[in-house]
Amino acid sequence: MNVKLGIPRGMLYFDYHILWQEFFNNLGVEVLISPKTNKDILDRGIKSCVDEACLPVKVFHGHVDYLKDKVDYIFIPKFISIYKREYCCPKHLGLPDMVKHSIKTLPQIIDTKINLRKSDKNVKRIVQDIGKNFEKRPTKIYAAFKDAYEKYNRYNSIITSGVIPLNVVGRYDDLSFIKNIKTKNYGRKILLLGHTYNIYDQYINMDVVSKLKKSKFDVITTEMIEEQTCRNFASDLSKRMFWTHGQIIIGAAFSLIEERSIYGIIYVSAFGCGLDSVLIDLIERKAKEKRIPFTLLTIDEQTGEAGINTRIEAFIDMLEWRNNNEDNISTYG
Ligand code: SF4
Image (cartoon, rainbow, N blue to C red; front, side, top):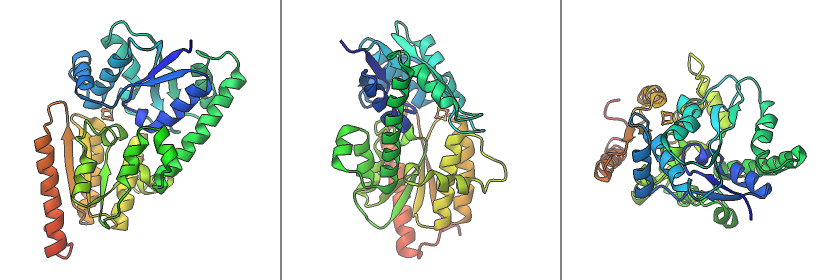
């Protein structure tokens, strides 16, 4: 019987799920991904995680709790750095330890350190460290990774291009959501900003994409902009942003603000997120300077859908009014 490995559908799963899925499959491991976030998963997360944690971390705990009795291993890498001279949020670093302390009777946790701060040469060591749990031959492990990495890169260019073939969507559940983002062209774009786990988890953001599409707006997300473009625009900051996700979110926002190709910006942020508090301030200032409307949706486990609907409706009304009556000139400009 195959070894079964659980991957929680939370946090950086949304960035790397294809890489992980393909890598483990190539090693002959049966992968079980927890279901999309739902009320049961959120409740499990709230019950097991410390109160002070941000919503995505709580939700992640819920996914682990769902998987814990169904698999032999759970994959929770310890993300320290994914880019030279940059860091991830400390919550990513502490995630496996938080989970181990909060949830009892866990299967074996694969919590390999991902630290590319000094050099990406560490990738080989990281890959071997993860793969050795399932395969003894290092060459086989590396070949499994190489193949997975090629597919992952293909997936990234597919997202940026927005043309996602049906067979690819069928294989990777979460791509169907991205495909839905880009199917129509209403000729008026809203930039939806935030961490991938806040943007692509439809349960925790109360399906903000569908709400915008219903109002006939196109949605663009950070992942649809080339990483190098984001980095070039983020370099406008007077001090280098040392959080990788901050670089990308800021750069995406700055590039579209400068291009003036968007009607407005909606930032989805988890309550109490330290990183977002810096990003939101910088992006809001830039948006004001260039007269692009900006609004913030803060989410936590208490957030009600009615409140989110009201904020989105008010924002859209303002955009429509501005477009129809003010020749797209802001009321404060
Ligand atoms: S960046 Fe913010 S939302 Fe993400 S894990 Fe850190 S504190 Fe939570």
